[in-house]
Image 1: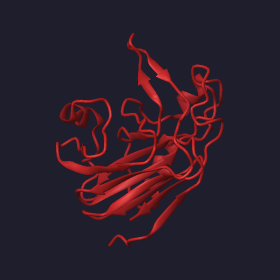
Image 2: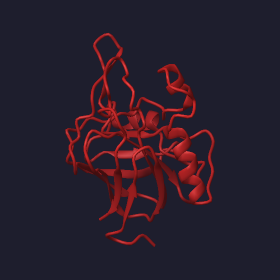
Image 3: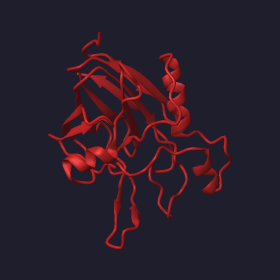
Amino acid sequence: MTMTGSAIDIPGYEGRAVRLDEGCVFRVIDVEGCQIADMFTLSAADIGEYFSPALTRQVIFRLTPRPGDILYSNRRRPMLTFLHDTSPGHHDMAFAPCDPGFYVALGADDSHPNCRDNFYRAMSALDRSMEPPPDPFNLFQNTVPGSDGDFEVGQTLSKAGNYVEFRAEMDVVVVVTACSVDLPVEGIEPICGKSTPLRIQVV
């Protein structure tokens, strides 16, 4: 049973997983500001069912959800309802979670913290496993397609205390990882140079 008022703190460069009951309302909070949150959602009953950005785009007919929209699973079932957003509203459903190869391409080594490995660790803490991870909903990530089709990378615009709020439409496992991309991408520092804390708050 999910306890109202409970919170899970997620340090920078790390991830956490939580099981949430159907009907539970929760927030993902950017504690200090300028932090991307990779949010993965899986069915608690069968982790072979998970959030599908592609199917969600097909149903809502836009690139990213807005408050009032539903996030759908790969089996076309409602998983989460997007209830509220106090951030500037920039989110992403196009990018996979960062992995060691991503950081090698940026000039770091393959031991750099990354959302793929943080997803694995968070799932392991619940005695679950899934490989590879499903695609996330990248909360607060400021990447938009330009008129030429290329992605325009911007710095994350969320401020300290900004949050997005969701309602679970089935029993789910939610994994949130604090994006680790502390290196410039296309000359921009997406998370202002360091990974900072996030929080999952059950309302």
